[in-house]
Amino acid sequence: MERTILHVDCNKFYASVECLYRPEIRNKPVAVGGSPESRHGIILTKNEIASKYGLTVGEPLWKAYQKCPELIVVPPNYPLYLRFSKLCRKVYEDYSEYIEPFGLDESWLDVTGNQQSGMEIAEEIRGRIKYELGITVSIGVSFNKIFAKLGSDYKKPDAITRIGPDNYKEIAWPLPCGDLLFAGRSTANKLNSYGIYTIGDLAQTDIKFLRSVFGKNGDTLFRFANGLDDMPVKHKDEIRDVKSVGNSTTTPRDLVNDSDVGAVLRVLSESVAERMREKGLKGRTVTISVRDTRLNSFTRQKKLPFPTNLSTEILAAGMELFKSNYTWDNNIRSLGISVSEFDFEYCEQFDLEGTAEHREKLQKIENTIDILRRRFGHYCIQRASQLSAATDLSDFNPREEHTIHPIGYFA
Image (cartoon, rainbow, N blue to C red; front, side, top):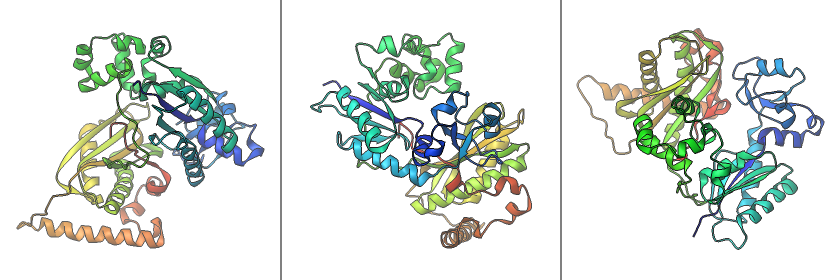
């Protein structure tokens, strides 16, 4: 039986919810973002009116104001957005038990075998969300998750697009290869350098060539472009294993030296380590992500000799990765760090150098910090190094104020 997959995307989600609750700004250009005084004040989303000024997601607010001086910026209200996300999910549950979220504002649904057709269900969901919640959605209807996602992006706002076996070459193949899920900017640029510009070009490229350029990801790109994605939509009650824990942030100013990078990575490492200890996790692989002021980015990873959830060890590995891989051709705009490859069977070995005893003391210190912050708040205790240097970079709470890495599509 051919699958029927829907991808539902709430249009301009954060901004739509804010305009719903604030009718006085509904007919004005609105963006949801951080403080304009800080560089991690960026546009998270904007309404349709603001889009007409050429504003883009991720754009610094100072630049957005240059394009649209009358822009109204409201701070994000995540509890409210989470509530609306849950309300949307309740609507989806009337049509399927197989619901897989892709962030707060997007979800896949597998409605295969339903008495109604995929288009009929999509029309009902679109109407109900608008009537019951007051926001709009765009929905893609397809036979796999990748093309369903492509369909929800194809026409916006408040639209439905069907991409089936009979028409995917007409709809999907003329689109830029960068529109394909997980074909990011660097992948698209590399494809373009080989004369591969559209999804159709990619679909008709020799898979052996794609493997030679992208390794195993070449197979994935080929399959996605040809509509051969067979990844299932997960059951709504399925709990996916955590594969990694990470944080990233756009910094309030450009980072210009190793000291600046260390100040930011220390705060991020503490957030990651704290969340790992809460979950009882220890990991062996540390990964950093770096994006410079010209929007070039890279990731690097390092495997540790033993699993850890200590911020000092995570930071040390992150700084080692950074110093050995970055040459300061440009200043830095954003940083991220994560830990993966969790080990649940490792037993600490004592040695004559007292390594295990030292790590045990560090563990007690960080556990105590966790207790204090849970009782009295994040800022009740901070390291002296954060107070003595680069306080403009280290005075933030990444757990509550910055990006927490989601679980990936292949998890």
